[in-house]
Image (cartoon, rainbow, N blue to C red; front, side):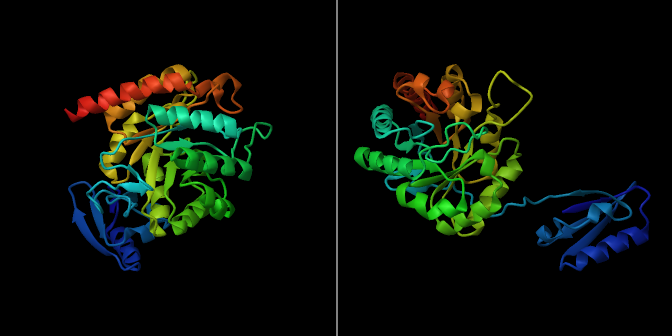
Length: 335
């Protein structure tokens, strides 16, 4: 951490700041420049996160040099993390397609979707049993009955399953039926939920918050890993901007940036990222090219009849075409 002093800061101001910082078992190093002085702080600077240093007399700015996330950082682990779920490896050069309906509606719907997406190359079956919706009048999911259907279809087709978890009280129940827990964008900073998932050691897909910075997203992953769970998969699903043509703005910059900053695998969700069926294919291709470790795409046997997110769901035929295009890009990148 670097504390930049004002041009008119006095020696007493500098001394007071140094003495305050040293109370937290940190060391300081003062560099006197031509116009202003800079105080370098060395040690576990996390202890200063909530301290009022910037309000102290003579202080101009406080700049963080080291990242606040340690376990998630690539500096802590240079090699790419591979999250293994049953016989599926995610990350480390293993590109994985995840697909299925936004919500579990029935056994018939799920088995039809699962067979179709598996045939196209998907290894992970998605399906929401608990649906946190913006409107309380929208379809909220089949809850435990939906989990049972997802589990049965997963076992029947031999696919790994993923579903959203919305409460820490559901962890044991959802873990009994699903293979990967998905933390949705609304819960990315539900820190108590993240801590409990960390303790569970269950594989988790952590979606980026609607308006979250990359640092906030990685800090959320840090909460999970700090509790001893290394099985974290990040998911870029679009952020809220001033643009209204798309549901969200899919931030592919973040995918490239996070691959530099962190060793964790990064999945891209072009369905929520755009909210438009016609944009999923081109954004899927772009995600592969930018270095994503996989895609999670909403696929429904009959999107026009879907109880949730039909407008951004592909038909099985459309998904098959996306998979074919993705495979061509992956092959080109290897050559």
